[in-house]
Image (spheres, rainbow, N blue to C red):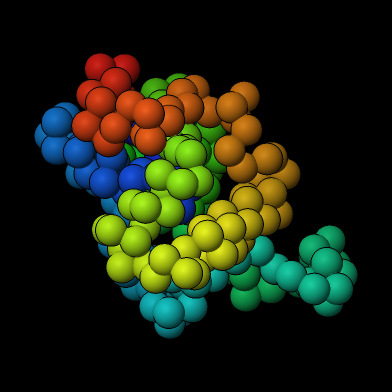
Length: 192
């Protein structure tokens, strides 16, 4: 039987990572998030800090735009994308699991048994959560949220040619600010 996969994309501060962990716990399967970084590092030999930051940053600037047609060859960012895609595909082939972020919804789009989820919330609720849970400073939290989401959206657009967070790109979109993290996890687990 083919493994069943849940991918969770999320806005910064929406609790998507925690929801992914809760879903995995409810279903008795693994949740891959930050440990994906270590797996990509092991496969690629790239530095952990580069993998962590580069996995959400689109190539930027005129030079990267120039290279985007890949006529000169693959960029380091492209190589990271390929390693990331390999690791995510290998995990999906190996076991049923939850995968948070890193464009897993796109990478696994051809799999028949993959539920793609996007978690979002009102900016004020996300900001309050980021301050409370992540230790963000109140005076900088709105800028941090905007920057983080902008980077995620640009990266997603660059590598998938799709719009990050657009409902039609996911099977389910849930508002964690209204529903709460636990209810979101329950809904996702029931859909599994």
